Length: 457
Image (cartoon, rainbow, N blue to C red; front, side, top):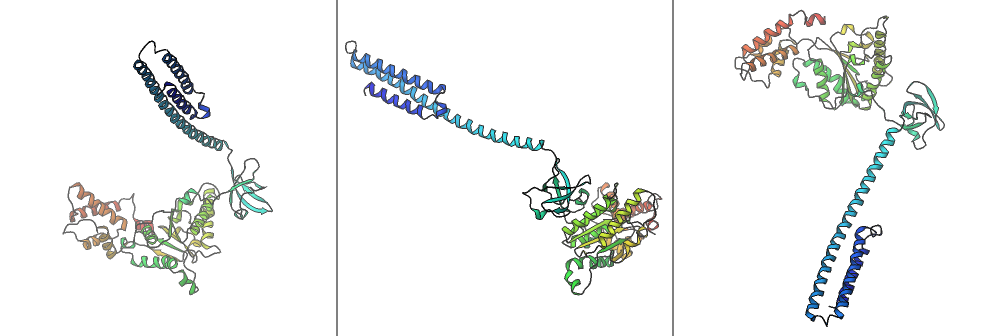
């Protein structure tokens, strides 16, 4: 092949490689280097062509051919090297452009977050009324304003009592918030269904039957009460000494039904500031209606349900306000067929008479100390999964535990189990149970622990 043809082919290849670069890369050092190599190659080929014209006098054609061939190989190697370098640069350029785009997106996102953090906070208020295109709202500090409304909001959501956010400067309604419950009220809901069943409760057959009639029937068969023209019971009060199983009964009812279980202690409703306790009671019943069918369980209700007396302390007056709100929610103007109230106390003599009347607590169930058969049933339930020696007689043990509550029987089994474990044995013996019985009996006579019957009666 004539060197002139090789030169033109190499030059076209170099120019083609250079034109493959984008417009913003053609001025880079690499393309300048390629152009320089192209000019240098053209000079080499021209020098070869000129030397070949006068080489007939200086050497043989074979020597000239070898010289031209070596020069061409050198140019081809350089061309391949430059082509590889150009491809690598193109790949790096695409990678860097992609990385720059990702960094720009991240910068924009961070700018939005910074802008949101710098925005002034909104004021929480409640809608009182609508006047044309404007709304009357009560702000969080108690003042009332007539303000404008964001045109993008659905006017149908701006009902009296709706929670809204207000602009800090103009107090205009910016957004409508969902109904929020007090954290103490929200925490009353048991997200997991109670695991206690009626099979785990012994010695209270009559109390279980009475409770299931008052609560389960009205939740499971409300149409039966309606067809008979009856108003279902609204509440049940469980009374009895401590440790007799009042809370277990309430949890067993919640387990046997598909109702939402809301449980709290009465002292949680006694708040420091005026109106806070009544507001919690109102929100508790509102949440129960929203999540109906539901069961509200208030343990130690005597904390807020004690008799109303003339008192000079502000704390007692606030407790009485909370009680009056509870009475209003239990009585009310609507029959809460799907909201049932179960309360428990070991001091029924302290409760206000208005709380005990029919229509609020329709049934009062006394959960007393178990009799001999009840104690035997409780012992059998508590030792279902506990290995016992052959000499253990639960019937005889039930006769020895006269006056024991269910909690004391459970504590006796626990004491016997700890004695067994300490002595590295695998089953409870009669001696272990007798030793545990002596420990519990000694605790019952302790003046610090007092007698449950004395406390109750």
